[in-house]
Length: 231
Image 1 (cartoon, one colour):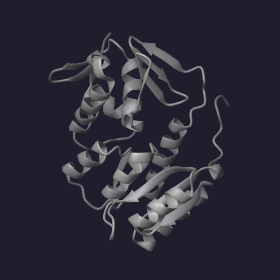
Image 2: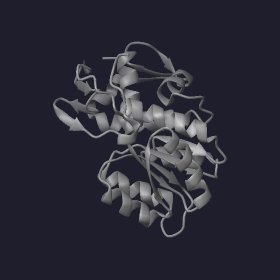
Image 3: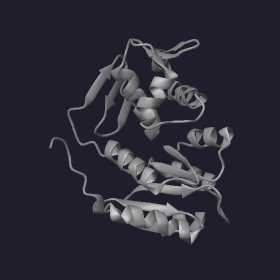
């Protein structure tokens, strides 16, 4: 078997939900896969647990909670950390989903959901986040991308990208000079059957271009279709 083998019990997952039944359900399924699960029943407790346990690999975060809701927790976490965040919500409004991605959420799952699907997405995120192939350094014009370290520089200056923005940039660079439809980008970057609005991609591209500065011009818009990465 090639590549690194992830030892799941080395990976801690913080599960934040005010419903104890939901926490137990998620905990049971993740524990069966060998993950170490830490629980929090509200936003304040979540931040306390996160900063007490410095090595949390992923956060599963409910939106609707007393004291401090999921959006507030996400904002606070993003001030200090790029830890992958999976948001759980009972709402399915498009505006909520777009807000989540604006704040740097990596996956977005609406309740009710299949715990097996949740675990599969957690596996997928952590597998990608823990790539250890140090040879994966790619140069594209002014951009240098280090997949192993999850780092991007433009003209030698370090650029802070969210997990999904990084994945999107990798996909663009690996498919440079190819016209990519929004559907194709969703299927490959989001890595599952996505039923949301294509504006999710436009939101990410807009933020990615802005962060890349002058190198953002490499991402060309193909009107009515999608995008193309061209140097």
